[in-house]
Length: 89
Image 1 (cartoon, rainbow, N blue to C red):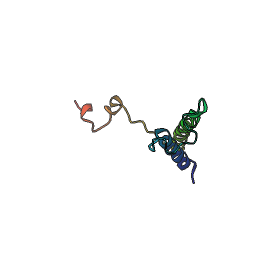
Image 2 (image 1 turned 45 degrees about the horizontal axis):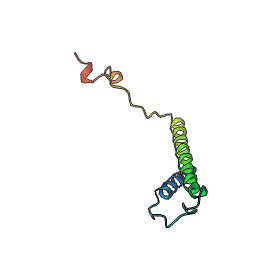
Image 3 (image 1 turned 90 degrees about the vertical axis):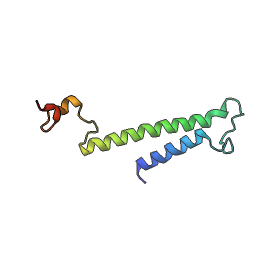
Image 4 (image 1 turned 180 degrees about the vertical axis):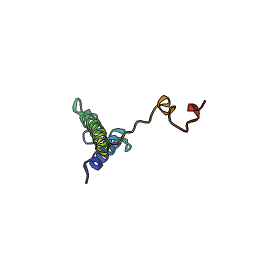
């Protein structure tokens, strides 16, 4: 599996764990335990942040390697192009 795919899986799993759709039926550490009860949610949040950063880094590296740019020219830069109605007098 590619690293990007693993990061997406980690991000989805950690978000699903934090949102906890099972209403506490699936808990690694019960929240009733003092101090350590929320460590599993903190770890899942840390995993989500780390995966999100790695996804952004990998996508930026892939974009830089392809030589492409996601930025669109601003309207002022497009105004001087031939065939543009705004450039005609």
